[in-house]
Amino acid sequence: MARGDSCLTRVAVGVGVGGAVGGAVGAVYGTYGAIRYRIPGLLKIRHIGQATVGSAALFGLFLGAGSLIQCGKNY
Image 1 (cartoon, rainbow, N blue to C red):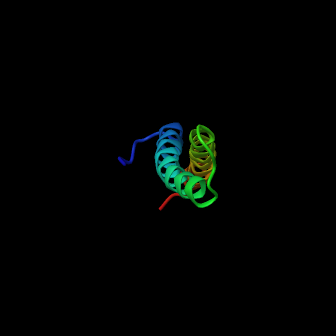
Image 2 (tube, rainbow, N blue to C red; image 1 turned 90 degrees about the vertical axis):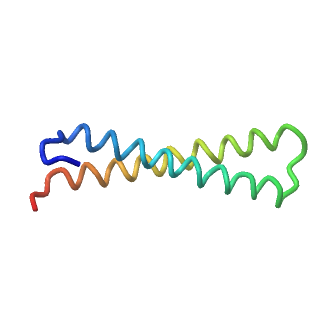
């Protein structure tokens, strides 16, 4: 990122990247869990969706918080 980026921009990018990575990981984990525990029928879709959204929210939160912490540091 350029030196002139605002802190808000950095945090927003952190949340977006964290959400994307978390969503991908959550989709893989949710699919594995649905197959592993033999969840029946359309409940598989619900299980995968919950895992994806929950993981994306958590990764986004932590990466956004890490970006916010890094905004105050001057190197």
